[in-house]
Image 1 (cartoon, rainbow, N blue to C red):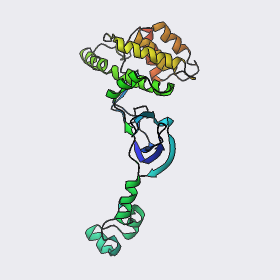
Image 2: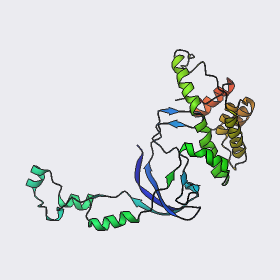
Image 3: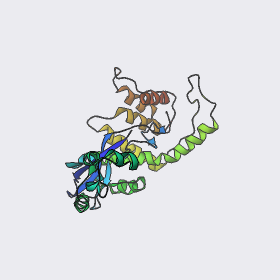
Image 4: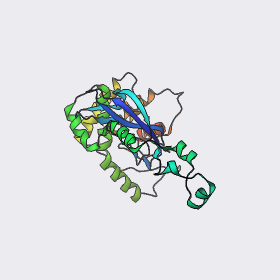
Length: 266
């Protein structure tokens, strides 16, 4: 399961403000839907690409921030009057009271005023950026390559959401149309808008000039743009010795079938 163990305190790259962000001790990547463009619907894992807004109003990536310290999840406060509680078997049996030993181990026994002061000293949380805010960031075109890549990737997936609704309705209407392996045999029409085409084209340029291009993501972008030959070339850059994962197989199959549009594959 996804478990938050506390908070990291970071310094933002824009103005150096100290902010808090979740510290995960374990992450569950289960989602109700997985899509070829990397979107995971109702995922239990963080899917925001680490994009945050600072208190100064500027935006940044968590990977660009500076680590300051870590704070563990606080213990619950000790129950009132625990110091004078009689620690005998009758109290534990009749009232279900915790033992003093248990309280000392699992509760915060400091005065409430001290705990309150510590809580007030924790910086505010870094603000998550919602999908609806991405368009303004795209138009501003401010930031380094990593930042612009993230916002264009987020925008790509966001603009694909209407196509997901069409796909779900299509799959429901053509539930019985599957091949011998149980895979979808037909797919809905997909015609991206000019805004989608422009954004995907810009994202392709960013990924192709990266130090280590994500060839699988590039293949998916070319496929959605209708450039099947370019998609096949991108797939060919993935070493043949690399274990063929489910997504790789799906994108390769869709490319060979010359199918466009995001596809739910699991």
